[in-house]
Structures are given as C-alpha cells and as structure tokens.
Length: 464
Length: 106
Image (tube, rainbow over all chains, first blue to last red; front, side, top):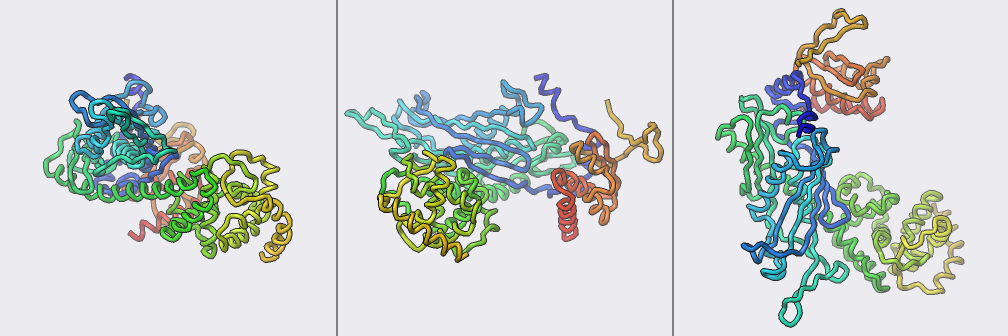
C-alpha cells in the first residue's frame, strides 16, 4: 500500500488552481465542454469475447470466458457471472501488482452491480442441467492505461465483450437425459449470450463546493476533484445503479440533474457499442464462410459472397477496398475492419471494380483461415501474389481482378496470377499458410495457364 | 513542501522574470522543450503567437508554463504544444492553424 501512496500523482497547487479557474468559465483543460464525453473507440480481438476500449487516453481490455460448473445451492438453475479486474502497473505509477487496491475493488463492484442487479445478462439461459451443470461466465478487465475515468471505460469493455462472446452449444443426451455433450465450435456454431439491455456507467466529478460538475473526468481532473458519482443507466432510461463514495456532499437537485444527463449520454454510447458489435458480427460471419474444408465450399463461398454482395454491398466494398489497399495487413483484417471501416471510406478510389473486388475479398477471407490443403494454384495464394505483383507491377493485379469479376468459376482468376504465384511460391515458400479450396482444379488447369499466361500477360500490360 | 515557480537567468537572479504567478504548468518531453526553445522560433509557437497573446516559459526539464489573460487561451496553447509532440514543422503549423480556426468559428 505504501508503494501506491508514494507513487500517486503529485498534484501541484498551480495545476489545481488553474483547473478550478478554468472551470469557473466552464472550460476544461483538454478543451471539452463540462458535459462532453471523450471519443470512444471499440475494437475487437480475434477471439470471441475480447474487446479493447479507448476513452481518450484511457485504455481498457475486456475478455469474457465461460466454464461449466456446479451452480450455487440457492440458485440451482441459474448460471453465474463474475468480474475480475486487473490494474496493470503499466497503466499508472500508483498501481501495484498483487492484491487489488481500493479503486480496483470499487471499479469491479460498480461494473458487477450494473450487470447483476439489473439482470442485464440472462443467467437462466446459462443453465445446462438444473442443479448439476451451469455456465459460469467470467469477465476479466485489464486496465492498460489510466487516462481518467476507468469505470466508464471498463464498463463499456465489459459490455462489448459480453455481446461478442460465444459459448459452445450443449445438448443433453443419454438414457435419462443426464449426459451433457459440449459441441466444439467446428461442429456446431457457438451461441451468443442473451443480454437484455446495456447498462452504461457515466461518471461525474464535483469540484470546489460551488457545484461545478463535469462528465468523464480526465486523470488530472480526478486528482483535483472533490467528489465523484457514477450513475449506471441503460438506453431505456432505467437506473441500474448509483455509486457515490466519499468526497464532498452533493445536493439532491444536482443528483437529479446528473441522472438526466446520464440517460442522454447513455443513449449515444449504447448506439456506439451496438454499431461496433454489429460490424464485428458481420465481419465474423464473412470469416466463418470459408471455414468449410470441402471442395464445394469453393463455389459456396463464391455464391455466398455474391449474395452478401447484393445484400451488403457497402460493407463488401469497404471490406474489399481494405483488402486491396492494405494487403500487408490481411491477417489483421478481422480486427481492423471494425474500427477502420469508417476511416476507409476516404480511401475509396476504384469504384469500377466493385464486382471484382468482391472476389478479392473472398480471396482475402479464404486466405485468412482456411484449412490447410496446400495447393500452389489455390486462391489462397492470391494475397501473396498480389503483394508480389503490386511490388513489381501494380497494373496487372487490377486487370486480373477486372477479368476475374466477369466469371463465376475460380479457375480463370488463377490463370492470371499463376506466374506471380509461382514467383511467390518459389521465393517465399508459402507452405501451409495459404490455402484452400478450389474444387475445379485439374492437371489441365495446371498446364494451361503457362501457355495462356504469356498471351494474357502482354495484353494486360499493354492495356495499362 | 510547497514549491514556488520562479524564472531566473543563468546567474540565479530574477532579472525581469521572477516568480511565475498563475498560469498553467504542464509537462512535455525534454525533446519537445528543446524544440520549443530553439531559434528560429518553433512553428507551433509562431503560428499561435500570430493570433494569440500569451506568456510562456519553457524549461529544459520538460516543464512548460503558459499564462494569458483568459484561461481559454492558456488551454488552447497548452493543448497545441502537447499535440505537437510527434509532428514535423509543417504539420505543427497546420495543426495550430486548424485549432485556431476552430476556436474562431465557435
């Protein structure tokens, strides 16, 4: 504990005085209004149920995991929800490893109360076998950087993780229906949790005794504030929890005012979380399609992509633009699409290739996670070949895509880049990573391209 | 212990500077403070100085003190300096001008 006290941020008189003077004219040191929230960024990791939230400088990571356990004695048919917080010493000099400090425990308690008391997560659906087996959901919150207002950021991270978490499906079997089979994700699609509503925590900081109040305090404001209050509301306007721990007193009128402000902010934050989760789910569905190892999947993925193209053209174009422009980051496409989708709107430069890019997205998606059936002429090598060809002659790839969009079979696409594939294969020895299915590959295809290659390569070069 | 901010010349005498009252002191990296002290004037300070009037004292230890008549100007200057940590000269000028424009439009 001494280490924590010794390392807490030393507050200079000068800073305190300035923050209070600025607040007197309704200004905050980072230029915000007193009632303005910082920018929230929500990203997701590769695993279902892992999220990363940035609230200005504050950085929190959330992870949800599930385990089958015996239920509590007094709640035989309900699952359990538990929250663990980890205040990493890299977040703040005053955070020490080991036993959680006061603020860590308080943060965990606020997030826990918001979710549990308001019954946001449906625990009855987590029951597998009444009285014997239930799902225990564990939320781990890691504080990576303390830029002020950890509670709100941690709450958002917990909610984002809960919404994207998938638990394996369980079925009961056996003669007496007592045998539980847990299906792995490859066998049966894992299920999301049932979350009824999203309780959002909004923190208010009070200063100076004249009732000056700000929303979402920054680290330095937290050091200066006289008191704080955290209100957990959901978008429907239901108050899930209120936490006011110590510090200066607040009149009742101020509390009512805070509650009203909180429900307004909660609406916009809920929308942000839902948008981010939706983008992640779309991207996840796209990724899932190429999971099937059979040869039919080649056509299935193409057909499915065409369908998806029609339904979600915007997403497809965005995603494929991403894959075109950021080939080096192909492996990170799943994570990056969520956060950078909006950014990439600026990068749209080639609308003429919408048809072709759909195919490329398919390639990129296939490349990312297909089963390991190594085939030098498989679609999966395209990204590598594209990379190589982009480096040598960017033109040919564009033409390849344009040609590829006309046809429905994967064969013709391969004919283009086979030369590049060969180069890529020889040079980089991409065994195993690339992959997948094409189904319509025959020896003839293997031979044909060599001849066609020379003919086609030149026109495409000339065509540029 | 209550430290007092004071600005002295090389021999330790006040020599027109003296104690720094009010204003806002913040920290930045030592590299940035050297750039702020360089001559010719660093682009961000130049761009800010053209439109705003403020006092600034920069220490080689990374502490910067800014003062002005209104707290809003102090906040603008402080944020502009903190943002120019990783920007090149041209970028700093653009960033400062954008910030000033935004303020004027409000």
